[in-house]
Length: 180
Image (cartoon, rainbow, N blue to C red; front, side, top):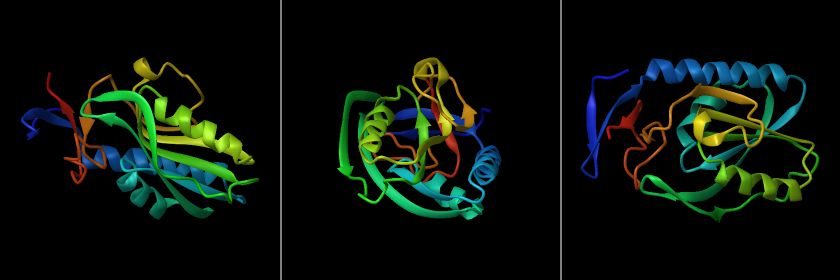
């Protein structure tokens, strides 16, 4: 989808995914999680900052018994991953024996998730499932299983719907892709 253009830090972006396309993907994620966790209690583990809009919309559609946990991890500066993950808000100690659904805004290199999965393993959960709104399959290369995926996208830098460019653009209700 193209058309509307914006600029963040002087960098041009074009409309990539509409609110309707995002809502449809979130609805599919919710349906799949509701189906798979029916009769179980799930811990929805949101990865901040990027997943906050997805979490808000997804939680409204989940009908399973759940609790919410949040972690804040950072591996990006500007348009590139730093290759290192910083843990800014950590995990609860109450995850042993629980069914965890990690909710990410986007999966590209998988560096952040690999780090988080290592932390979760130490907590001895009953299960860990991964859910993401967006995945860049050509960069991620199926490094580990992603159980719930909204939309596969090409390797383009995107902002909006919680995702940012150096802190800007998170509030946008649509997703925009950088124009190179």
